[in-house]
Length: 125
Length: 125
DNA sequence: GTGCTTGGTTACCAACGGTTACTGTCGGCG
DNA sequence: CGCCGACAGTAACCGTTGGTAACCAAGCAC
Image (tube, rainbow over all chains, first blue to last red; front, side, top):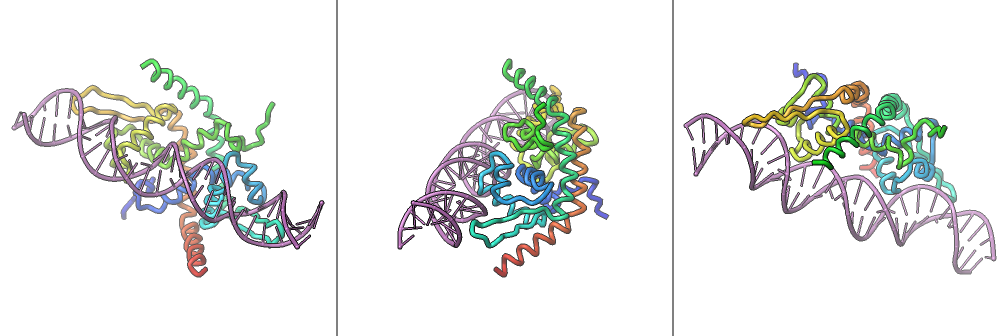
């Protein structure tokens, strides 16, 4: 057996890397957080997530749709309306992501502090 | 109190974004995984993590050191020796990351399948 | 002196993320 | 009739970033 020793993702050819890349995408995380409690339309997502350019949001949404994390529903209306909604697969990601954001919130001050002292030391150097 | 509505990270000025950015970095995740069970030297990390360029590894390690996730110890030896080791803060990240990689491994086939059908549909279009 | 090892740094380059501006469509309004 | 505005993007451009290849410094063995 080839026991890939717990991590697996250390092999650049391992597809888990691909998944990690997607999860690692900043916007993906924020989109999932935004859709956690219901579907939203494009412009609502844009407003909810501060500072995202439409092109980038489109790219992110398409990639997520491709990966089966969300569904894209176009309503043939006069002002076009497109709803985005998490699939069960996408919803199953909210758990792990919540774990991560919890960690971030908990250790935020610690990190910022460490960063300050590092910069101060570099300054003095 | 300013209740930032569960997510917080939706404000681009919120420092949690910064933390998410770091966590979202592909290499950071892999470095933490590599150091999980003990310190490693630069070249060991390089070998362990497939496909990382020295420059990028250096950047990643410096950023992590700055954030207090790991310590960098230089031994004044003839062939220089530099050891990298997780701090308690860095080690506390292994939990959340494990959650994520577990998810990735569990849903990998599902994602890959979704991706295939999406591509097939696009092909036919 | 030359070569070897380790741990990087320094050009250099392509690709991607991001910003701004523009498009298409249709209803409504003047 | 003709123009405007809303929505959901797309197009063109451009700067930063990730990545590659080459080089450097220190000391010891030869």
